[in-house]
Image 1 (cartoon, one colour):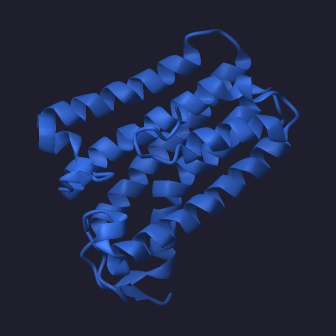
Image 2 (cartoon, rainbow, N blue to C red):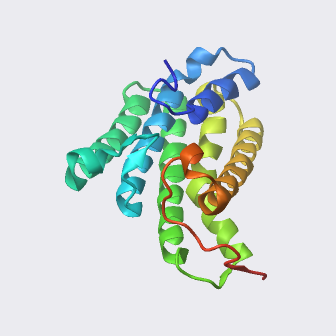
Image 3 (cartoon, rainbow, N blue to C red):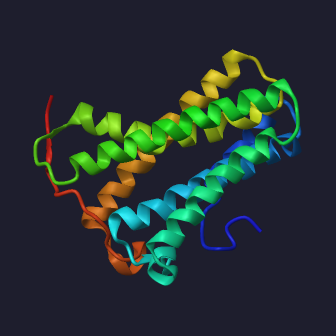
Length: 204
């Protein structure tokens, strides 16, 4: 059951809906839905290690329970499995989907690197923040919102539109997450994690 572990399964849901958006049954997007959810969970396992968060969804984080090395290995395994799910069967649509996911994953990792570099700075500019948030969260959501359409054989125009929608959604999602990280109530949002100081953004 999607979300049975406490997650929202947002990325998987977007993948299924994107197939429907281009007139195909959602079942064609199942490999993409599985793949983006695996990549998302890979990122969470590694993110908890980097942030030192001992809990995830009100449960012990993988690294806190099994150790840092095991958590990293588990994340790496999820990433490998995500791409295996897409390429285990031949087809141009599968190849296109795997390429899109690889590019989104690379952008997400780069965005996480930007976030780590900016975390203790008080002179972060709005463009720098938007670049980080767009890559860290927007890239995978953009892929999620279009991968079903790709697997359905849609052309570049609807795929581009769906990708843009997902990227914008991801940007908003990251903004809300960061605001909750500063001002949210930990009993609702979960244990406080690495927090960017409020008003640490400079115009420009």
